[in-house]
Length: 206
Ligand code: AMP
Image (cartoon, rainbow, N blue to C red; front, side, top):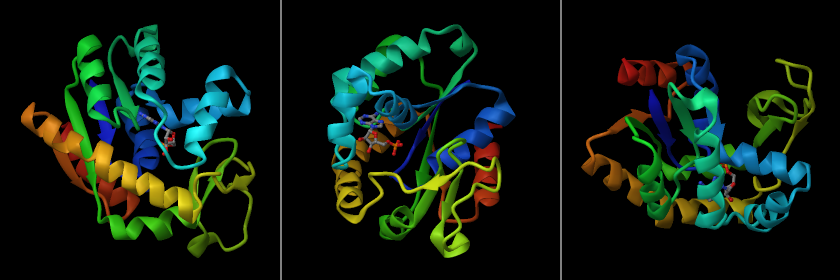
């Protein structure tokens, strides 16, 4: 099962990815998570990535393509994978096609106007990555799943979110046509509740 989760920032890719990976038993590969881990560990990749991520810009293709190429060559991807946040540009999609066969692209379809509020109010658990929203949790800062501390991502501020939405529209949205043409695109209505969206995904994956 070689699956890609496509969609704008804040559409719920990470949230759905955790559930898909668990149910279908495939590794969840999030390029955003890989970058955040590198930033935390202050690796050379992390230092480069941080300068782009904090501004809400995409990390250069050559950096991210090499990371994914090496990750997909690992043993646990032998029977499939779930890519979350990659590809984000047409050159990334073309590179991916050169080293693997994409079977299904789940396109999380949502009105972009909903996303600014979702993202600037988002809080994530530093330890397990679970997402929350201030409109539900208020000032609480402890993860109810694992007890970790809730933080605001450094790119979930208004200026960075604006840039991320622009990057999505200009660089990532063309991938919808790219995968439609290849006959692998499944549109998933993503504005609803987490369980409802997951139900749509289960139907699409069969
Ligand atoms: P995410 O966690 O998927 O929202 O990613 C956070 C940030 O990491 C993005 O706004 C980009 O700056 C960077 N990033 C993640 N994946 C990619 C990618 N495939 N190409 C370029 N930049 C990426």
